[in-house]
Amino acid sequence: MSELSAAIEDFLADRVRRNDSTHTIRNYGGDLAEFTEYFSPEGNQPPAVAELDLLVLREWLAHLYDRQLKPATIRRKLAAIRALFRFLSREHRISSDPARLLRLPRMPKMLPEVPNAEVTNALVEGTGREDLERPHPTRDRLLMELLYGCGLRVSEAVGLNLEDFDRTERWIRVRGKGKKERQVPFGSKSAEAMEKWLDVRRPAQESRALFLNHRGSRLSDRGARNIVKFYASYVTGDSSIHPHTLRHAFATHLLSDGADLRSIQELLGHGRLSTTQKYTQISLEQLVRVYDSSHPRAKSD
Image (cartoon, rainbow, N blue to C red; front, top):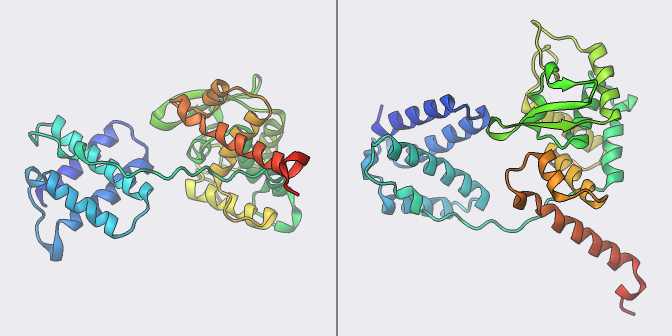
C-alpha cells in the first residue's frame, strides 16, 4: 500500500470516529480513490504525501476542469481533498496545507424548481390510487406526508425510529446533518397516515425503523428515492420530482402562506439563515409570474 493510500485509509477511519454519515464517507472514499488513481498512471506508485504541493494539486484541479465536470461535482471533490489535507496537517504528516489555497469554482445561481401546492398535494394523495398496485401504499403515503408535510431530508426520513415520535403532542425527533437533532411538528394527515402504516407494518428481527423495505428491514435512501420517483412519474407525469423537491416545496409553500424565515430555518434544520433565504427569491419569482400573467398593466398591447 502506498503512503497516500494509507493516509486516506487513516483519514476515512477518523471520519467514522467523528460519526460522519455513511453517505459522506462513501463520497469521500470514492473521490479520494479517484484522486489516488490520477497520480498512479499505469499502476505506478503515487508521489509521497509531502510531494503533493500546490502546483501538483492545481494540475489535478485543471484535469477536473478539462473533463468538463459540473461546478458542484468539482466542489465536492475539492471538499474531500481539503478535508484530507486538514487531517494530514493536524496529524503533523505534512508541514503545511497546500489544499487550503485551492479556489472553489463558482456555483451558478440556480433556484430549485418547485411544484405548486396543487401538484404537490396531488402527488401525496396519489399514493392511494388503486390502479398503481404498490405493495406498501400506506408506507408510501406516510413517506410522502413526512417529506412534504415536515420538510425532512430523505436521509432523515429513512433514519426515523418508532421512539422518535411523540404521537400525543405530535413532535418528531429528527437527526439531521452532522448528527444535529431538532424537533419538528407533524400534522393530522401525517398522524392518520402513520396509524394506517403501523397497523400493517411487519418488521424483521424487531427492527425499530419506521420505514421498512420488502424484507422487513430499514428502507434505504435509494429505496425512498425510487418510491418518490415512481409516484412522480405515474401521478404527475414529472419524473424529475425527487425527495428534495418536496422539501423545497414545504419551505416555499410555508413562506408563500406567511411563515417567517426564522421559523422555516428551524423546521428545516438549516445552520445559517442565508441558506433559508433562497426561498425568498423563489417566492418573489412566483409573484412576478402571477403579476405578469394577471395584472392588466403588466401586459403590452
